[in-house]
Amino acid sequence: MPGERENTFDCATRLPDGRLPGRRLPDDHFSGGRRADARQAEDRLTDERLTDERPPDGGLAAAHLPTPETVGFRRMTPEDIDTIVDIEKECFTVPWTRDAFYNELMYNQFAHYFVMLWQGDIIGYGGLWTIVDEAHVTNIGLRRAYRGRKLGERLLAELVAFASSRGMKRMTLEVRISNVPAQRLYEKFGFRVEGVRRGYYSDNGEDALIMWTDLPACGMPSATRPDGQKG
Image (cartoon, rainbow, N blue to C red):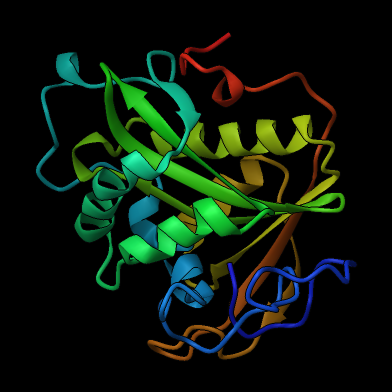
C-alpha cells in the first residue's frame, strides 16, 4: 500500500492518484478516496495479533472452529466492505476506512483482495499488489475468535499462490524487528531479510525488516474460483 519509501517496483506506470506503484505516501488514511496509509497497513500485517497465537480466552470451542482445510476463498467485492471494516475495527487500533477499501477495489488496478469464508461467513481477508513481476503484501486480517488455528498462515499461502499464478517472481513485505513470531511465519514461506527501514513505524519509531521471497510457478489458487471452494 502507499506511504513513504523508495519505489520497490521497476515500473513507471502511475496509479489513478498519480502515485508510483510501491511508493509510500505520508501517514494518513484515504482523504476523499485519494490515498491510504501503508505504514498502518504494514503495522497490521506484521502485528503479533496476526500470527497464529491463540487468543487469551481460548476462542470458541474447537469443534466449532474452522481449520485450514475447511475454509474457502473468493475475491473481495464492494458488498463485503462493511464486514471487512467490522473485522478491521476488531483487529486494529487504527483501522482502514470504508473508503480505503472501496478505492483499492475500484480504482487500484494493481490491487487484489480476497476474503476467507467459513460456513458462508467472512472470517478473514488479505490483499496484495502485483506489479510487473513482483508482489507486495498489503494487509491480512482475521477475526479474533478464529485465531490460533493456522488460518493466518493459510491466508498468506493463498496470497502466495495467487501471486505465483499471475506470473509474479518475487514477493515482499515489511515486519517489525521485535515481531519474531511473524518473522518465523514468513520464514516458512521462504522470506528472508534483505534490508532495514530505520524508524519505519510511526507509533514508536521501531525499525522494519524488509523481507523478500522467490515465488515458484504454481497452479491457480482457490481464490480464483467463483464458488470460493478449494480445488
